[in-house]
Structures are given as structure tokens and as C-alpha cells.
Length: 280
Image 1 (cartoon, rainbow, N blue to C red):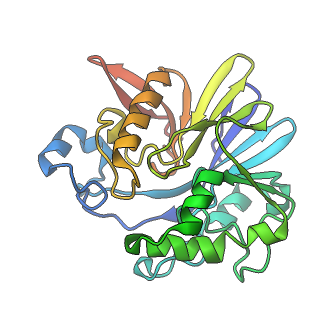
Image 2 (cartoon, helix red, strand yellow):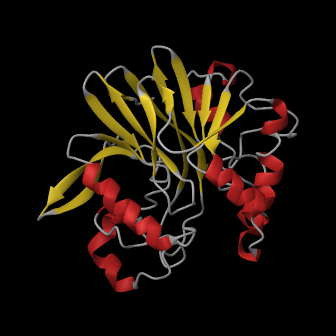
């Protein structure tokens, strides 16, 4: 399996599978179809948007960190039978659940917390791991009564909140240290407490973006908002600010981009930044 390095940090992309392809106006309802004509590279050969339930493993000399846990074995009914690939994907990478020392959740949407618990929900799926999540996100979902977000609330209550009673959950906010070389970077908007990760090792920097980006097109079009953004205006501001920090050659890991090309960098063309995947 392909992996990438930021100094002493090894980044291994893993996946919980892929969502069914959809017309791009479903995830991006405010983007006219004509605007996609300049971004055909971000769609498949049928002009469909494809989305990966992607996770990242960060191996450092002293820790093995899993970033996000996918959709999991229990998905909202509209997904049908979930792909539930993460355990097999980790096994293909030679990583056992009990090797994970830390599970970091960029945010608490249902497609990121699915394997926090075992399939029966009775124990942490990663038995030796410390789980880290945003306190702001925790408070938001704990008290959320928005009728448009019932699927997320149900998943939070059944597939994530029980971690607290197991004594393995640590709630954090702001800029916090995950390991000596991995630090949180507040990137609110997609959810109120969304956190990305800044990687720094041997003078080299990288970024794990979480759900700041859902399509390669958003690197060139940061104004485009995904339908799941809780605060679209804040999400747009966050994308613009993060793009200012992303420079050509920097290793960038973006989970929802297609598995096999969701680690890459940015290229500057005619003054605009574009996604450039490292196709493995």
C-alpha cells in the first residue's frame, strides 16, 4: 500500500469504502451545472461526483494515530448496506486495531465516527486507543434538535457518545497536541468544532484537512459549499484561510477525495491553486 512521509511521520491512506456516485448538484446545490465545465477533473467519466469515506493513519516514532473512522457498519437507511471496509483496509495495510494508540476525529458527522465502537456497540473498536474529539462538536451534537440533522444525532448518540462511559474519550478544543509532531488546527464551518491537523517533522509540514474540502474543485473554488456544511459562510472563510497555508510541494491529505489519490499537494496555475493528487 502506498504511503507518504512528512519528515518522520508516515501517512497511510485507508478507506471505509465509497459512497454511490451522484450528480454534483446534490452535494453542491448552489453551484450551477455550467460551473463544473472547468472542473471536469473533479468528476468521474459520467460527470458524477464520487466520495470516499477516507481515513488516514499517521505513524510517528512513538504513536500510531487513526484520523476518522468512516461510515461504519451502521449507516442511515438511505445508504443501503454500508461498505464497512475500514477493518479490511487496515488489515491490508498491516495494521491491527490494537496497534492504534490514538483515534482523532476531525468532527462528529456519522461518516467519520462509524467505527468508534465495535459492531455491537458494546466496546471501543480500537481497544488500546485514546479517542480525541472536539468539545465544541460534542456540545453541538449533544444538544442538537434540528429536524434536518436527526441522522447525525442518532449516530452520535448510538455510535459515539458511549465512549465517554468507557473512559477513553478526551474532549479538546483550539490548538492542541496529539503527538509531538501532530497538532490540531481549528477549521470551523463544516461543523462548529471541526479540527484539521498540522504535521511538523524535521522542518517539513503537512496538513490533514478533514472535511474542509469535499471535492478537488474546491481547491480552485473555495466559495463552493457542500450541503452538509453547518455554517457555509464560516466554511468558506476557513477554506480560504487554509488555502493560504497550503503551498506547492506540501503533503496534503484530504479524506473524502477518492482513495488512491486523496494525498497530494497544490499546484498554482494562472494564479489559482488546484488539487494535484499523488496517484499511487
